[in-house]
Length: 103
Image 1 (tube, helix red, strand yellow):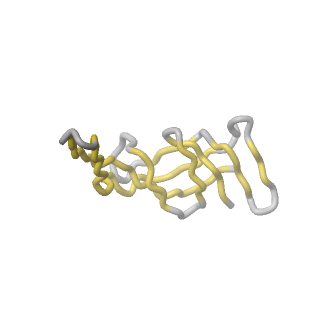
Image 2 (cartoon, helix red, strand yellow; image 1 turned 30 degrees about the vertical axis):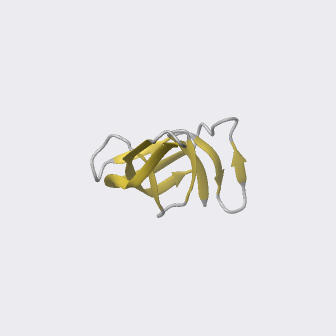
Image 3 (cartoon, one colour; image 1 turned 90 degrees about the vertical axis):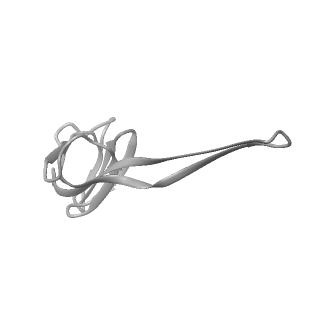
């Protein structure tokens, strides 16, 4: 059994018991969250595709971690002008353990 859900403009394929690292969501570690933007769901023999979403299917998960990803370095450079600029940032993420896909 698996589903494809949309979170923060990105699509993720999830199974019950899998862990997904997504963009930061508000909530504390241990909170349960429900994803209702399900694009596709399969129970092994039947495949259901939404137009654009499946209304009666919900995916629930539990927040297991809040943190920051590795640092991304952005280096700007213009040749022959002596212009160099080095910037960086660490994107925040939320790690979610998928508990159930309610078909």
